[in-house]
Image (cartoon, rainbow, N blue to C red):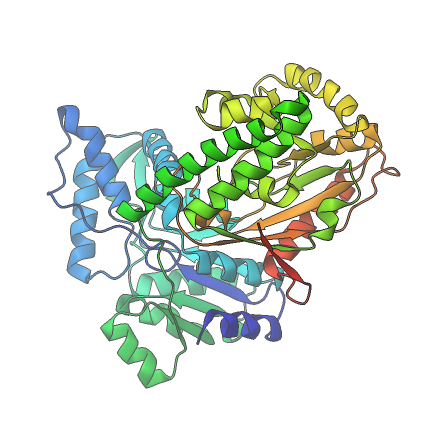
Length: 482
């Protein structure tokens, strides 16, 4: 079974909260990490932090034998005992932001979104602990998580588990208990897992799916006629990617310089800025080999001015926006970008407004001149989420961009970006080859919105992003950029 067939089965199958979608964690939701090359360090001196990292990070894996799982429990008992829950919680969050988010399977994200849209009760279950799984679950919007609980005394880990570890039959038993407590119908429910020890988990539901199955799981799936899915892990950056990035930055800077020079004779700053934006974007796409495909390109041209809202995943979004909008716009950008040696100067030249997100009062004051900018004919691009997301998930929208559009009397235009986070991961400047899809949606008139009561209106706009990512428009004309 391929991913499209799996999605179709979800959409045409039973709907509602009595249907559960249960996802194993390591190897199914997260690709995981190869075991540490060296033995785990004992908890002492300067190696203690590394030991904690090793036990948290390298335990996120797929298939493991019973003996291997027992050794994992022994290791964490030795390394974690005497440590506070808060320290492990903080380190788990830090590792997610720095490393783990890049190992979440995009296919798992898509399936979770489909089950969510079907009204299903989504559950992640794991033999690991909450320190590894909860940061991922929160980012994916999964509220129900079953994991091996660690015993504590006054907030300090004892080194023992609280109750039985969720391993093999205990994992399946935990899911059955959850189903009974939440009025779940197992016969209509789904489960996804990769390893032979999770056969009991797949047996507990009516729609089992083996994901990236190992030899034993593959044999069992074949014998029982269970569908299988293949999830592709994100490849780490290689030499070619580093070379592509270096060439791309060269193209970006040279394109920007050429654009400014081509309009320097006009002595009009806006003309030079517009030429810089378009030429730099085109040169970057050519030198990196990244393609941009646009649906609804006509909405990017008219009406102007407008407030363009985009979902923010990577630093490469700036190139994508420039390639699609071409000219006649500027941006609202977080203050931290000013320290970027490439994008900082370029954005300043493009007359971007920089705001300090930690200073609410100052941020509002900085946005006041933006209304005059819009009234003067220059459009604005804003990321309403306020920051880059770790996954394609659409985060909560802030209200600033909507207030600006209402006050300036201009429409908002949703600009939905797909795959930019695969081209350049969050917080990474490395560019991978691929295709970024952009859907420019129809303008939305906000003149009738009440600035004091627009939560429902904003939620409706946010839902447009979610729906577009789920059901990408395929019938409309697609335009390649440049």
